[in-house]
Image (tube, rainbow, N blue to C red; front, side):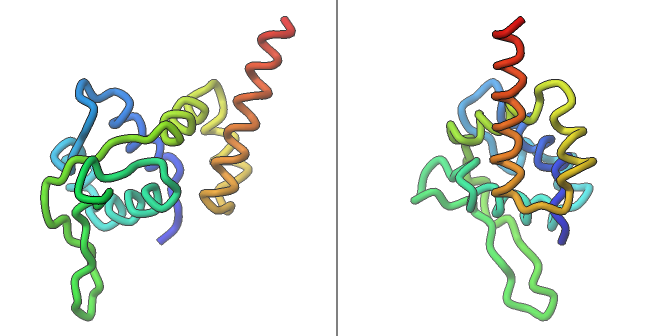
Length: 133
C-alpha cells in the first residue's frame, strides 16, 4: 500500500483538533468506513515513527493482523491513542502554508522518515523567513 500524506494529515488533524487528550477508532468513523485497511496501515506506520502511541497498555494500538490468506488488519478494541510531541511537531509543520502541497507534488515517493525531516526543514525555513521580515 502506498503512503498517502494527505491521509496522514487527515489523521493528524483529528488528533490535534480533538477536545480530549486521547482518541480511538471511534473518532475516525469516516476514514474507517472509507478504507479500514488504509487507516490501520497508516496508523501503524505513524506509531512506528513515534508520531502517535497507544495511551496505555505499553503503547499498543489495538490493531491486529488476522491470520488468514487475506492478511487483513482488525481493530480489536477501542483502545485510546494519543499524539506524541513528535506528532504535534509534524502535524503543525505539515499544515503551514503550501507544505502539504510541496510534499504531495515533490516528495510523494519518499519514505515517511524523509518526509518528516523535509517537512520540519520547510517549516523552519518559513519561520526563519518570517523572523527576517
